[in-house]
Every structure is written in structure tokens, then in C-alpha cells.
Length: 247
Image (cartoon, rainbow, N blue to C red):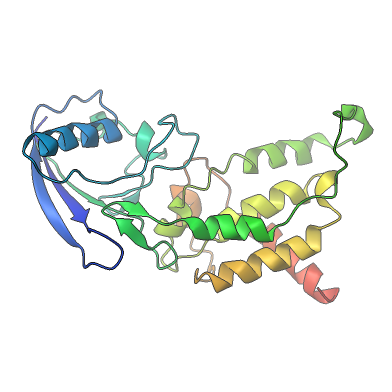
């Protein structure tokens, strides 16, 4: 395939960025999207030009490091991570626009790399759980009904990639935060700090400059792990309960 790539280039966080156009030939439909960018970078290196900076790590859809706006969609046209998106999702002659996550709370570091440290700080505000360390307890000592266990496992698959924020018109991280809060809120181990956890995490979310949730649903539509939108309802319920109890 022959492709025209329009890619955001920005030398550093203080510099002004702009779109640059590149032509790439002989792209295999079996390449992943990041492999295609690797090929482009090889060409740029051969020409003595600065390669394009982008984040990646496991390239197996697990770590959440990769994250690009591709033709205006978080992670591209498929419901998957950028590293698991393949070039067969495009066709010969396509023009592909590639940008970093578009959110005030994710400042651009260089080219397609953004600082997602805000997510780490929200997690830190969640604190720890009051669980004794030592040998693993007998599983049957803390019974959890199957519906809650299944839902906890499902929302725990959130990889913190930031697609929900990038897709949301408000730049809200409510889906990410709600997944973390719901995961622990459904399990016995998460109960002692349940109310302080939600209050502190929401406060940090707002402090970081993320927008408010207006239930548009773009976050859930873009989520590569298909975290359901209704976890935000659980977040709101837990927050109301905590506020009523004076937290």
C-alpha cells in the first residue's frame, strides 16, 4: 500500500507543534500500526532526519503505553489498542492523520508522546487497602458473589491508556477513575477505605484539569478493553454516599 501520513511534530513541550506530511510506500497490510511507524522512522533515519517519537512498550495490547489519535479516533478505526491495530484496516492511497492524545491534562512531551502522569497521581490518591501482608489467605474465607466477582474482573482490565480522555469532548477521565473505584468497591478488601478513596481520587481528578462527565459515551466507545459506561454511575453513587457521611 501507498499511504500519505500527516503527523503532528513538536520538538518539546515548550515548542509550537505543526502537522508534517510523509509518503510511505510498500506498506504491508499485515503490519501493525506501530510497525508502520517503525518503517517510517527507518526511512527518516536513513535520510538523516529526526525520527518521530511515540510511546510503546509491550505491543501486545496490555500495557496501555501506546495511544494515538488516528483520523480523529482514539486508537483508530477498530476497538483495540494502537499496537494491535493493523494496516489492513486501511486501503491503498489513504491519507492518515496521526496526532497525540488531545487533552489539557495530557501535555505533549514530544511529537506523539504525552505526559500521562496525571493518571498516576489519581491512583496514588486512591491510597492502599487495609489488608494484612503475609501468606495468601484461603480463598473461601472471603466469599464474593459471582456477579460482583465477574464485574470486578471486567473493570480491572482497564490499562490506563487514556483513550477515554482523548475521545471525550470534555477531556474527562471519569471512565478510567470509575473503573478503578468500582474494581475495589465490589470486593471485601476495598471496603475500609471505600469512601475516602472516591473523595480523594475525584478531588485529584479535578485538580489535574480533567473535565466533567456529561454522559456522552465516547469514552466507552473508544475504550480498547470495553469498560462499560455504567461504572461512572457507581462512581457517582459512591461519591454521594461519601459526601453525605461527611468525607
